[in-house]
Length: 344
Image 1 (cartoon, one colour):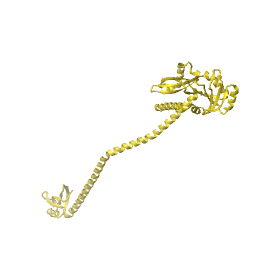
Image 2: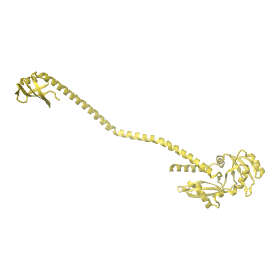
Image 3: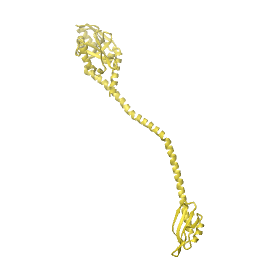
Image 4: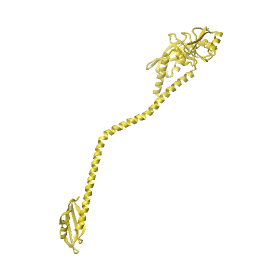
């Protein structure tokens, strides 16, 4: 909010400085919609003797005497206008420069009302006045105060009002030759115009903030994506290494499963051959395979004949008794050990 206020103050000051550089007739055309100027080239304390009527751009409408006849004639010439700007005789506008703290700019009108009472022999209510910032520093501002006593222009305003025209502004040259213009509109109107300018500036500031609010999320998203890309680039070598390890693990697992499958197939084939090699009168009570060595426990009618039968099996080799053969219940009890070819 402070940024918006600072911009408003700067733009208002800039417009005041630019407006001061414009020719007076251009400013009159901008500020006086009617475009009628009543010029008093000279006047005494008893009132003006003659006056001129002009349109915007100093287009003359005629010169008239300040008596009733001249005013009636002038009223006919300006029937299209209801308001007018009074151009005062040279030197009637007064000027004074006041140095004030920079913080006074926010309440300049109110502060100048007090300064007029202190710096001039008049009170603010006795004057028509206006002010503009002439220069500034970081701590001080110089204000150009242009004013005229109301009593000094009362007879001029009365002459214009008898024409059926309402004065809305005073303009003229000060003692140093600079142009000045005083708006006679009520303070409320001036404040409303200033408020409208501030509102326009606030609308522009709001639009800029809206654009920024719309663009910032996209900018943040872009920055986040760039940061994510940088992180991915940093992690890419580790990811590639992990992929290599995963593929190696898959390969090793496949090879291991293949070996296990081959061993199981060989074991099943060996068991099939062993079953065929044993005679019908031989029975196994148990067998145990460990580190390629198969142990067979059982009983048979002729245990010694088993050695020859097992030797004939291609997947078995070196069969031999592990303990002496005993006899129980009319059959021989044996324990034979044999090596298995290609056992897992």
